[in-house]
Image 1 (tube, rainbow over the protein chains, first blue to last red):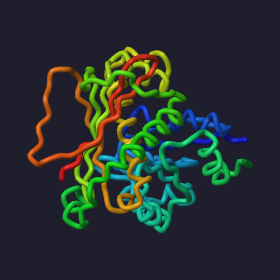
Image 2 (image 1 turned 90 degrees about the horizontal axis):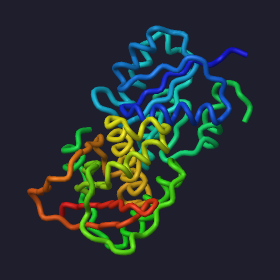
Image 3 (image 1 turned 180 degrees about the horizontal axis):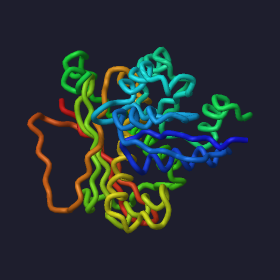
Length: 128
Length: 163
């Protein structure tokens, strides 16, 4: 089975590593893991194509996760790539906004590897 | 929406001393879930000290700041729990780990207070490295302080609220 190419977007390098570790612990077969520190950097990575999955924080400087998500609508390379938003805040309205703008799921920090697996695996065709 | 716009858009939620229990629950949960670290009450709490202070601003229905303060050694332990042993000697990773922990604690606290969840925004974290500083606020403040310990070393979590 093809290894997954994943883009992880978070302004915290620590958090990007934690998300990657949680994906691996959750049993996802990761290939290349690309990182971006904000939405603007992430858009450049998306335009390079060949991504299987995007996980993005919401609260980031320069371009936040919701802006990034909305920008993906105009990027051909993003078509069909599931996006999972990661939020620190307990704001239901931001989750609803993300889902209505094309996000396929969300994770709320703090999260366990098991929760990451439950939310992400079905989106990339891995049975939970 | 900017933090200032958030503040203007919502009625203030009054300070509630009962939030101390919620802040404690939110903090213990974050350290347990994200780090597998058990924090305990500090037997003899004094004034907060330590070279690492992470801060996250809050605006909207509640205006203020969440801070976490501890020594660099303790912060290094948290960073290594998050990223592996090498992180304990990397100052940038230590600061990043502290900022992210503070961010998640603030977010988890906010999520547990129903009147704040939708009406309070968080800033991105800022971390002060060093001991010799004093923070002043232009507005009167109220607040909560948790004195905790990890492996015998103190860690303080504070919620400072502009009243």
